[in-house]
Length: 269
Image (cartoon, rainbow, N blue to C red; front, side, top):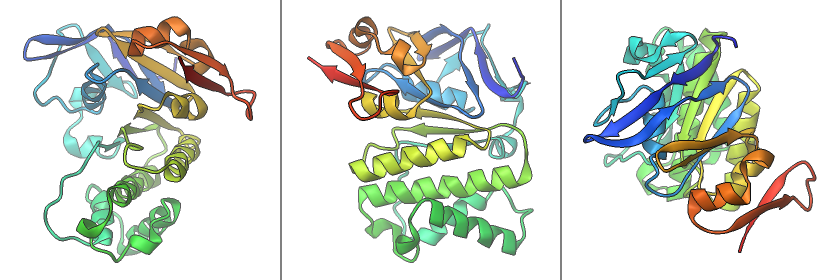
């Protein structure tokens, strides 16, 4: 396997001496979108945080190892990591007045080496890709929850575009429930953009609660239950009745999508 991947070995995660994940082996490669699925409280956000290089309030096991493109993740400093991976958290709490363009420019903070012309070019491209041009001059605090999420997505798009401009290695994008406050149109819009992004040698890890969105748009599903990786496989293999019940405690079945024969749809009963 190429070293151009995000790889974990024997990854155990603890919070206040309580084990959250037990000896997980995970591989995320460029060019794929992987969904992280699990019930509330299963540890999805904690796992994503650890994989992104953040370790506040958690510890990893002594035998655990996380490698980003062949290098130990914890050997990167914050500035280096900001050029290798981008993270979109569940929410971004801002209580002071900023315009949308101010928020978008935050995506450029790790890249002072870019010229003003290059920065403006990246901002314009991200604004177009994220479809937020009509919001760019508005006050961020006056936006709806869904609009704020779209602006935050655009901010991270700015960072990703800058990352790619400066590097030809595999990059990573991690998102924690980015569709939670979006309507169906923009849920699909965001996931379609992730599919486009991953084609540029970007590995995408996304936490979703909507199993059907995950099944339709993601290459692999990583199922987290009972402190273990229950399964990590393509949707048609991962979404068995047994796995769905173990994951959520309710009965479900994956059937062929009525309009897209190569996709699957989960019905609950």
